[in-house]
Amino acid sequence: MENTFVYLIGYFGIGKYSLANALSELEDFKIIDNHYVLNPIFSLLKNDGITPLPPLTWHFASEIRQAVLGTIQFLSPKDWNFIFTNDLTEDAGSHQLFDDVAKIVTSRGGTLIPVLLECDLETYLTRVIRPERRERMKSTNAEEARIRFEAQINFQTDHPNTLRLDISHLEPMEAARAIIRHLQQRAIKSEIKTRRKITA
Image 1 (tube, rainbow, N blue to C red):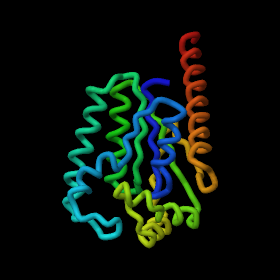
Image 2 (spheres, rainbow, N blue to C red):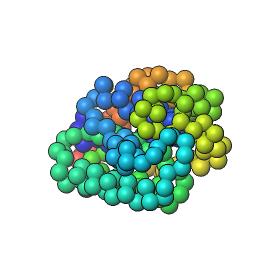
Image 3 (cartoon, rainbow, N blue to C red):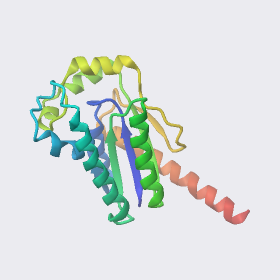
Image 4 (spheres, rainbow, N blue to C red):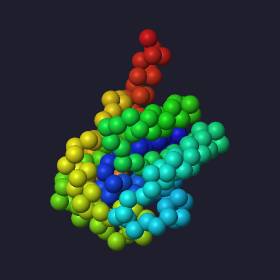
């Protein structure tokens, strides 16, 4: 597997980082967790995981994000694989971020696999309040999580490689294996399509 980008998309606290770690145990992936970008900024602020952060926080975080994306696009070896994680919603900013990643993948001649993660509310709320999230400067606000869940503003994409995956009752490694199977199926379909073009 080379030059493959898995994009894990789901509510904050749903289990994206745990899943990314499980995936990286199965295949050689570099993890670009959302907080890989945010924590350099969060560590300089009063951040208790519940109190809203100053609006300007996101401006500076965006600058770091662009530097990370630019490094991947222009400097990272072309055979490296990456996992991105984000809590995206149905708004213009989320779609712009997704498109930014998609453009980088295209410029590298890579393969993008968007994975839209789903989970039932009860399981989701138990995951949000886990102590290890606080250690990584992530939100543990259960009420905010409930509001986010009930708003039903989940990110949608018509990308042909998209996988929808309900992880309510899956351990991270089980979910990771499901993603690997999806990757393998996409690779087989791509190979068949290539062969048809050659023989046409």
